[in-house]
Length: 79
Image 1 (tube, one colour):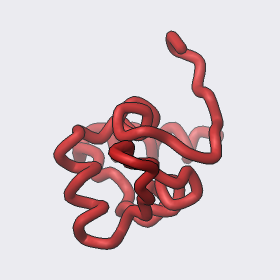
Image 2: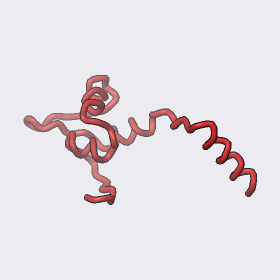
Image 3: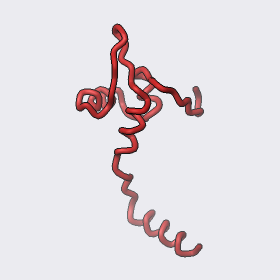
Image 4: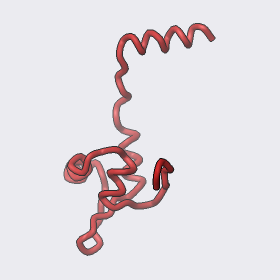
């Protein structure tokens, strides 16, 4: 709700999209690839929150631009 992050044990597709920042297509692709665990309750697809968290943790670190990397190194060296 709003900018607050609600921690849950399961999500709908739309909830997983909102919680992760992934697109709907990406969520469905991750399910199809077996990297995101989902179960069905009638017509509703339910994403298990621990599976979504594991997927996010498995992603590679973001690459930052060379200028930003240099600034971060300089700031660290100043401490």
